[in-house]
Length: 442
Image 1: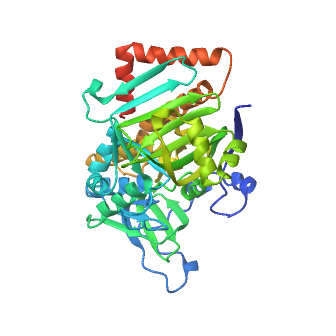
Image 2: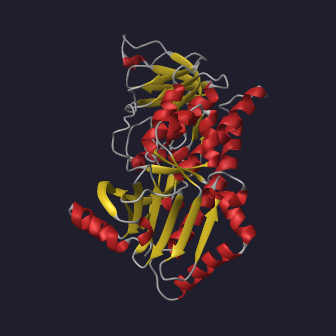
Image 3: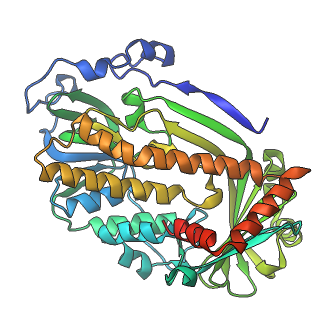
């Protein structure tokens, strides 16, 4: 069976701290706590030495790409913002090896990073623009090409290391008035009430905010404490990722090829480097990773197309499982989810981080509009406006990737014929190609 459905999970109750089944009995009780005074004091269980309660408009749990982008954007608009993050990103060293984790940053996401004040920092480190995209079937059934010039844009996007994106956002956050970062710190607990939310942090701090944002990744602590369930599927393949040094410099093109063994992709990196992605059965991925460098590079040379050129060295490689997740809701009173805490997606189209940045754009706009209308930014009806804007869009992209997964996985019979026909159709109809190209830019 190509997909394995995982039962919907409900998080443990933050009131009882008990297990999954017991937590379901308390579903919703955290949202009906006795109403405390507007300025609550730290919990007495924290001891006499507890720090004074700090106050913010928005408390963001997670200082990764999505969380810090949101923090910078709304702090620049006058919101008092606190961010909680376990680990500060390391300084950039031009001599350091390229990160295995890279993202294809769309033009729309670039706009978000510019609004956050981070894009100039990205360009000062490392980013590789790409103007063209080639997609083809190895069996010769069809192909399609996309070019930014067809839509009047200089680029389709940039390939950027994830750690460069995060560091650029942290650099942008320096000196932003009204933005405070708690690091290293973790979220220990949440107390939601009518006037706001009190977060208890591992460094002894308590923060009272009008709104808490869970931007703390796929295994979100905020989502668990809010009893928000997740529907998820594990795909039947894994992604093998390798950063390689090639004999010839990479061009301004990213490509994807569909082969009998699984889809392959190339993302150009600075100079003579490239990021290769190979979607394969888990046992085959394990076999490939167990090879020594010479045998691994020989396998790549045999399996990847000649467009890659000769491979000189392996910089690094690894693998990760592919899981589709979607939170059952993005919003509850005084609490909202964004980025991977709300959704994860098959990486075939490279849209994961772009969906997260679009969450940032939508949520920031909703909060700014609510403040302009003198609305409570933590009110459920305000936050549901954000969910209405993003949930359907994210679900559509997830479902589209499910179709791609089935259509472009190894197959025989009519599937390759259908796959080739769709590629040819996308290539032969200029209006459709322009629409798809525009869609790829965000």
